[in-house]
Image (cartoon, rainbow over all chains, first blue to last red; front, side, top):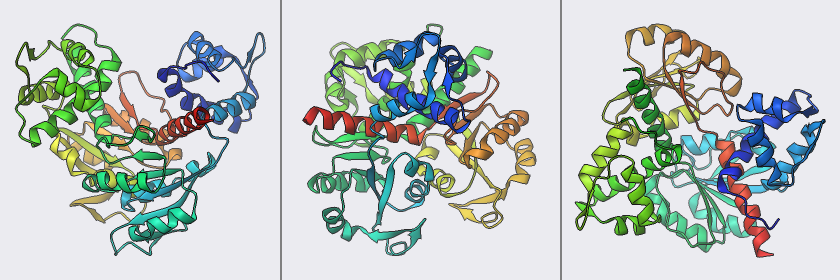
Length: 212
Length: 212
């Protein structure tokens, strides 16, 4: 795939994937772009444009084959391979992430859970033992790790980022509420919960202004 | 403020706010758009354009007054008023949200934590008691609630959305990994963790293709 696809299009793909997965669960085999449009609350033209970026998948008069489209978008999103994840920080957030069975269904496997806190090291979260962070080095040498989830406190994140880079892990799922300084070839996905909350309060303020 | 500001600009505002807050913490009183640009890794022209949407704030040759800009963006984001939050679902994720002290600093106050599970009702999370969901109705009548955080399992979310609407709560911070069917005047901010993970795997797949 050599053409450049805009970030906006890519950002919408997981949503398509989610909706198509729900259609599959309901046993629906095909869907028109109009029906999909209605369901997802975006224009049919937007859907056609988005999917045309990846070669289309639709057939005039037939619509989309749900299973096929689901699988193809899955491949685009890299979900046709398994990703091994270690969670660094086994507090409430780390434990919450470790508990999501839906991640595993999409090929994201939590293979390790680490913490500095001796009180929780040794504990088991949905079958995964919490290990001491001191064991991380050996663990990464012995297991293939694709993604490190950063769920430790913010003040530990920068140092941990250096460790992760040295260990050769290439991707970080960052919940630490700060942007990490990283080499360019490290892939980061930030989940800034406080940004999300501010977006919500912006919309509340906007709504209140409009009511006046 | 009557002009229409694009969603893309709004989405960037919390990030400005975060960076300006860090500058303030470090005692920095003013900053040029070039310095801010370098720090935030966006172009200076982008920064000027973004902030011009809200009337500018900058002065030629002086740069931005950090405190002033921080406060003004705070007002835009609605952070000059307190928001009361109830968390619905006091599992690991709900407890994690209840534990973030940084939310409170921005005026987001967790005033209640609710669950159906009798084993955790009565428990205390950072000083907030977990209440039975049966008490929600009375609680909302007695306390002003701005935002309901949805951290319950997905299969409970749709019914809870109806309850929330009936109780007159106007905003939902939704972690339930599904889109809720809601009246148009309800404000929703979705945090789709599995979408974020798929975005990450997309970027890993893209990176791997480019290496070949």
